Length: 68
Image 1 (cartoon, rainbow, N blue to C red):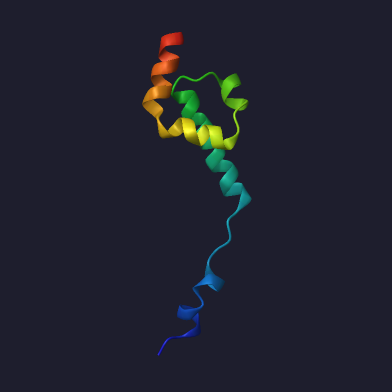
Image 2 (tube, rainbow, N blue to C red):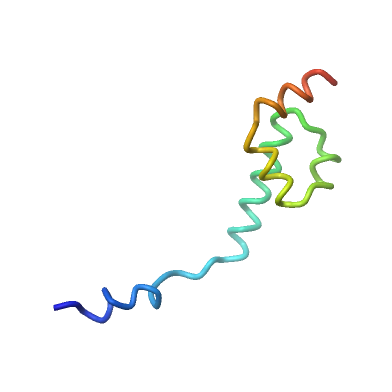
């Protein structure tokens, strides 16, 4: 009853594209800048640090609001 297409879903799954990953990372960095973090400081962060900071946007906003 099952067709090959339904059984072998792993063969039809799309591949992750590097361009889309780069766009996500750029957008995440833009979000940090929008929260008040200096651009120079954002550029020094690696992708894991960016994600960790975006988990708690209120804390980031509060931290950099004090400095401004």
